[in-house]
Length: 265
Image (cartoon, rainbow, N blue to C red; front, side):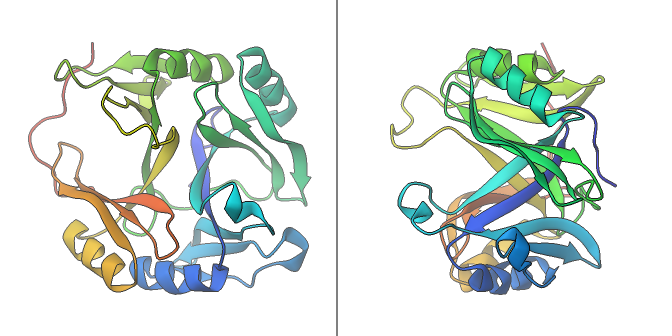
């Protein structure tokens, strides 16, 4: 069931130059099926795992590929999208797509924080968001990657009711959990100083798989690319991959864990 608390990750979609190719790739990787792309919503195609809505594929608009590459987008829940837009601006962010109704499904906006992180906001109507989470083929986690961790903590906790909690670890790693109601909702990772300058701030979306190594092999066989990993962690074995059109995402086997999670500070 979707988590529709203010600020909770509630939906994800990927913008692609070729939606049919996306269906081939993700259908074989995750076993997703797809509804018929709706012309009235620009060819937006919803993805299902065993009949439950888990994500969607959206076509790039003409000319969009030149300024925005294929990418996964995360939406955070809100009870009032126009009010969220006001908070984004007050906190120093930009509203890229103004609040708009999407039929009777809900309302949305797209925004950018001062560090360049693009995210969506979704106010549910008939479409509440993820019908499944934390299992193979479904949303599992997301992390904000930024060059200024403190600024991201401040911005997002002003727009949403997040409580940023620093996670203990090596001095070179700056990682925080953004909590809602005392539980983790999102991760935030600050790029190290020597990170390549051409890596833009962004949100990484994680999808559950039954076997991380097998999922990586399948993705590569479908024309995708391994970016990093697989790696073990206290939260699961995971890898960063790109699909056959260049959209980056993470796969994680939540059952294969090592050691205990680090403490909060």
